[in-house]
Image 1 (cartoon, one colour):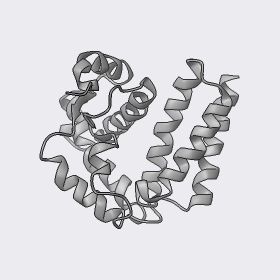
Image 2: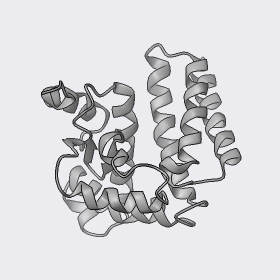
Image 3: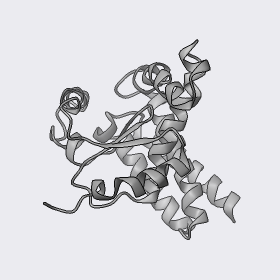
Image 4: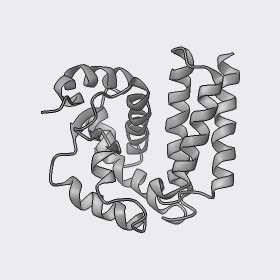
Length: 199
């Protein structure tokens, strides 16, 4: 069997929990990911292979972060980005009465799935003008830029990452979340802002 990050899940979970205590890691082996993959394939208008969601992409739902078993390792950069999505869910959980208020951080992250889902998919339109999805992805990458700049990555790396990831967020990978020109400009502003702060 090929080496997998899952062989060292405990170590990767420890790294993730240092970023976000509510984070829990799993593989995409369970049947539950297949219908989700089908919905994602439809939202991408079939422009990417159905298996890409299962074999290539990390996915975060509340406290759960699912990674393809085929990945040999999980970089701290990736974990930082995905943990920010869990932190976003924790914050949005405060807007869900009872479940988001009294049962701790992990339950609050589950509660935050509903408002996060509305932001991610429906504000303003699922395809083309999904500003919520664009903003949440940009915010997660901003957090990763901060981490990267503190850990030896230079400003040019951050700018290059902002450009390449903006193109993915504004393309079929993320169901055309936001117009490409606006999206690239917005990501670059965030990258430049973080590099100025780190200088």
